[in-house]
Image 1 (tube, helix red, strand yellow):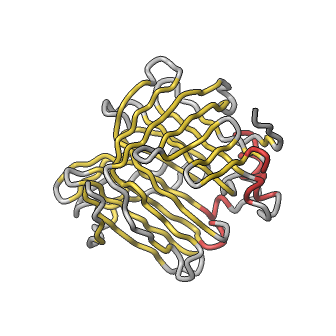
Image 2 (cartoon, one colour):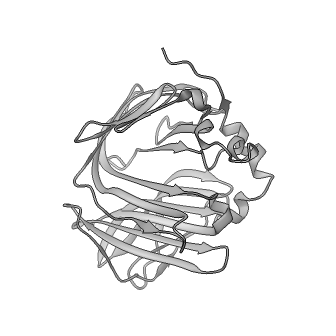
Image 3 (cartoon, rainbow, N blue to C red):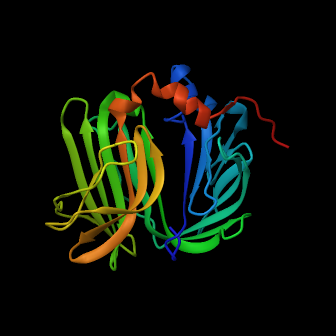
Length: 290
């Protein structure tokens, strides 16, 4: 999120693009054949890109992840993201530039999301600075950044019906909440605080803070001090099964604004969703590196 609070960006690298209808229709047998660097910009002139690419578009090394025309690499200090993508309908245009994520520290935290470790959340850098330089007026800015990863050996909808996640920068570092309802009815509820030096500790769970539903009526909730009613301060991504937004809540008496996500996997399982997604997620099976 930009320091001025008017712009934000999200970048997700996928091997096995979990929200791609093409990956689902393929039977999810070869994740390397469904790769993507999804870039979404929020604010004036915001765009959404998510191209499902084939195995010929994937190149990897220990410190580099490359998918077609875009790539991420670790230079020892920063995660450097070079983007060259085309946005989805209805606003089709090219998005090109570079994003640098500079962690204050790297953590060693991993959280299993299921008892058999089939899904793992890895918050690499809960507190970071971000520098954005995209070839569009007004899209050169600095702000608050975050870097994490999720790993899984099964589809999300095979194990979960609903989850929410939130990350809030605080005066001491950052606080993250992970809440999920598994298909067997069991619940995951986790809260971590991170110092700027990367020190992590579990913290007592604040009560759930209700929120208004999204534009697609996706249920949303986060956590906050007793009596807090969280509120959206910037809309980001609204889909029939998914919501991402900037949310304001109160933690230990401090008003904080962070990024919040809600995912309704019961809706995502609907076969009606996949053709809708195909409009926003084009498939480009072939790629040749220069």
